[in-house]
Image 1 (cartoon, rainbow, N blue to C red):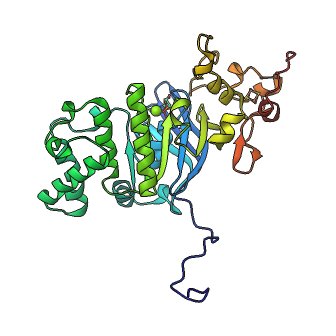
Image 2 (tube, protein in one colour):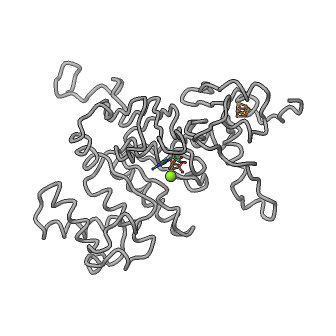
Image 3 (cartoon, rainbow, N blue to C red):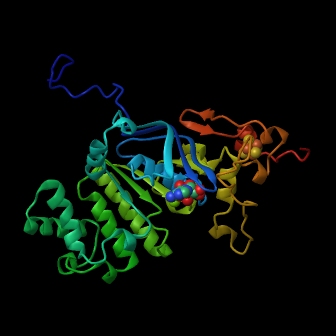
Length: 349
Ligand SMILES: Nc1ncnc2c1ncn2[C@@H]1O[C@H](COP(=O)(O)OP(=O)(O)O)[C@@H](O)[C@H]1O
Ligand code: SF4
Ligand SMILES: [Mg+2]
């Protein structure tokens, strides 16, 4: 029988273990001729094994740049990490030697991009590309690697995998190519996958299929998954938590359930209200007024204030911190309580 003194006993589940990925107060800027674009401004999030975090926000909010910093593939120059920590199983990747980062990136974390056609090699068959993962990283013989490639293609539910293993990327449909990219990412059984708008280029039915596949594989492999998207509708069924980004900051961080039930930030409210709903067919869709700010000139105070229906004088000068709304839930809005209660914003500003 296992007892506390038995060295073979299972580890104490209550013992604090480091998160799979723990990003803390990350800053990234791009130094360009047009000025300094502050793309990531103090982002913190964590992902554990077996968990899916959705990162949501309009185009240009810093979602991809954060992911690139985590993966160590930031376009540098002009991009520089200027602050924070990126801990992977407790190890700060920003302090790791380039060789170590490459090793981790190859085997322990992988990324899936929106555009499979430009991410895959057009002049190599998909079997050769998938097999190469095993040949290069595990020293497998070509014939065995090919067999593994077929196995992987079956795993991601590509029909007739055995007969299609010699086909080239352009011979597959968009949805099937995306599955091939998922297979590439899965090959070495990473602990973490970052999927950056993996279904944006696909039509709605195929989107749902690819999203379901990702969710199934994430459970099967007990991976951490970061799902980046600008489309709140896509992630509702598959994510555990959502971090909403605006102008390089996380403005709300909550469980999917809480966030959908009652958002605690006016920006999240706006995003929710702009999703088409079946029960409101024919009604005009809400759209958040205005555009996201230029990252070379982020407004003072709350960066969302020029667009916010609840904004008051204070919002233009006083930058909101991350308020604790509930355990594990934050909002960067001074007026999160009235937002949560969905009270009418005051008219006198
Ligand atoms: N290679 C680059 N060079 C200069 N600026 C960049 C580069 N990549 C990203 N940026 C800046 O970072 C901002 C955020 O980009 P990104 O993270 O890709 O947004 P998204 O939320 O759409 O993924 C961009 O709007 C741009 O200002
Ligand atoms: S702090 Fe003010 S401007 Fe910012 S989201 Fe809240 S109410 Fe709107
Ligand atoms: Mg992006």
